[in-house]
Image (cartoon, rainbow over all chains, first blue to last red; front, top):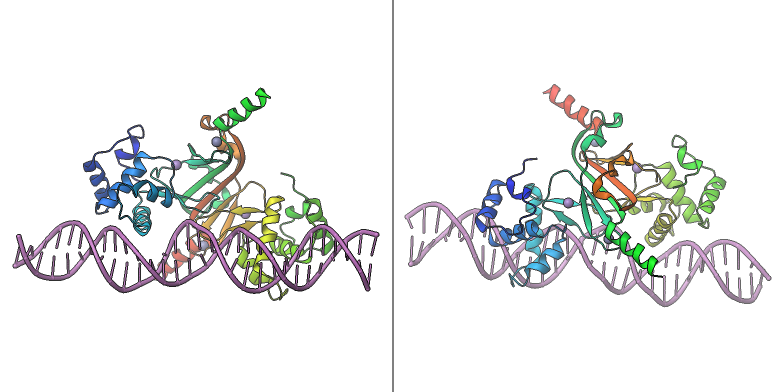
Length: 158
Length: 158
DNA sequence: AATAAAATTGAACTCAGTACAAAATTGAAT
DNA sequence: ATTCAATTTTGTACTGAGTTCAATTTTATT
Ligand SMILES: [Mn+2]
Ligand SMILES: [Mn+2]
Ligand SMILES: [Zn+2]
Ligand SMILES: [Zn+2]
């Protein structure tokens, strides 16, 4: 899966409209205002947001925005490979602008979804010989480091 | 996670009511008729069924069965560790009587969900140091061996 | 048989996501 | 600049998997 340099600049928190436009064009997407805003939101808020999260964050900026447009845009981004969806054990779908292979950890205490690195060597098993693998999802659940430390500190206070 | 011998006998396709009863009791579940039927179905049909699949398969046998009872039973089984849920990229939840760590492959052609072995060594990464991992899901998507062979044969005929 | 506890049922409801037709916007051609 | 078709956006109604909950039925105990 080809990636352009926009996605690699994880540290950068603001993007120029021109680079956002080019990015969409490169993926065969016509750069409308809404699409640019949603792309910008996804690049600047790497929290694996839901459609609802995106809608709530943009409705002040674009008062006429409809949820249908958010869904339409995300469906288009998914089809064109701009985003991936996370299939965690929760009812709302989350979207990820990072489409490189990586794992997700959901903390059951704070709800945050963390990224972690994985290799696709997991799929090198005899049972999948002759199978064509197009994508992989790796999801883990438990308690994150921060929440573990909080729990530990609370116990010490007692 | 403790497993009793019932789940290991994957080849066996029928179960005596007494062993089903014992199995539920061991997991702290009172063995009602519906629970036994659903357990039996899960053991004898290792297809990762949805609640709907189970309901449709049992409604002839138990004409008064309600979908709520199927959901209630599956929720109870999940809570007591008798089943796991699969959160694949589809809208309906699937249930798996095999709660050992293993991966799932969904064929986008025939829709079948295959099992494959995995190790939990994937989670041995620095990024998860200090994290408590309670469960892992590994899902792959693509084309299964059978469907690949069918596609290959069709091409050769042309 | 009487009684209480637990399981089951069915109807109403929730809510994330979809369908679709009307309205608004865009952009190319004149 | 104006026209006009194509594309995008919007709002409303709808879908359907799953939940809620009170009433009914089943089960186990005395
Ligand atoms: Mn991610
Ligand atoms: Mn399985
Ligand atoms: Zn946490
Ligand atoms: Zn297949």
